[in-house]
Length: 104
Image (tube, rainbow, N blue to C red; front, top):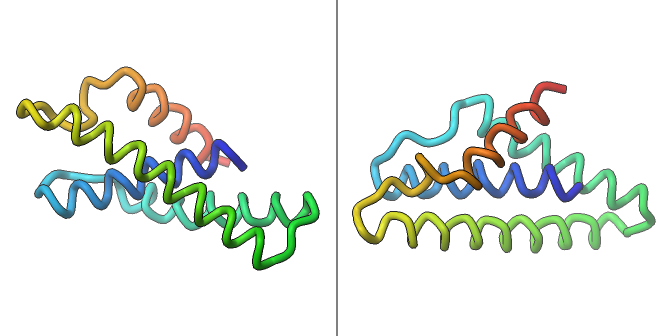
């Protein structure tokens, strides 16, 4: 649930940033994984007793919050002309984890 939302948020934030700033963003598979991760999160929340509406809304709220956190981080790194995610140890770690999570 949390890991999938974090990965979906990372890929969505990178895709949005790349489109807005002319950079190369996530691969086609990574963009496709966004939907998979969010669907899994919603299913998990349904299995935990949330209604369909609540599972959707809480997943959406959480992923938007994660997207905002990554976007803020990208902005901070890029403000002095740096690349928003290359060379960032946290992003590199998250990307590696998301790559493994997307293999199953």
